[in-house]
Length: 175
Image 1 (cartoon, rainbow, N blue to C red):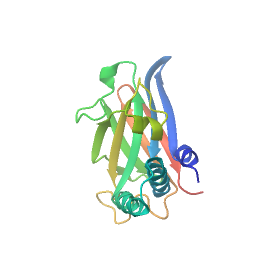
Image 2: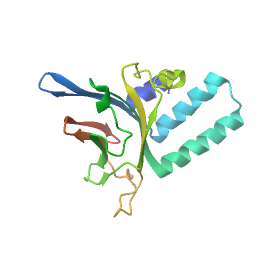
Image 3: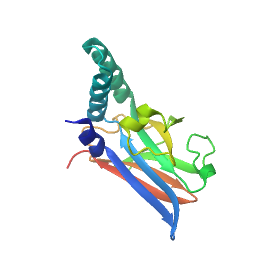
């Protein structure tokens, strides 16, 4: 499938308001294995890289997919100081939850340059008013023997919550 189709399939957005006042606009892409393959194919084609390099990049991406649940997201807040997801004392909390209620906290949240041409090309919802982030969650809960998502998982939710509001982005993994 074309990269844009796969990007659309794995991307969700939410606008969080308090009354009529905007608090947070968030758009996130779940980097599932299908997305990772499409991303690498598009990257390799854009740069006309050799097939051997494509294979190496795919192995690396699939290794990451086996170890982490990863999302790229952009966040817009009307007050720039509210856009602090990368800080340990952020006013926002992020969680990843499956349909059984198993909840994961992020291992890392890294701010990326949303104005970078590579980011803008691969995640066209990135704009000059938003900050971009890469968030990694573990594959296993602290008590869990099964990975999240497992073969039984129906849906995943990325939850954003804080004193300024709450929003959930949901991905159906199977019917």
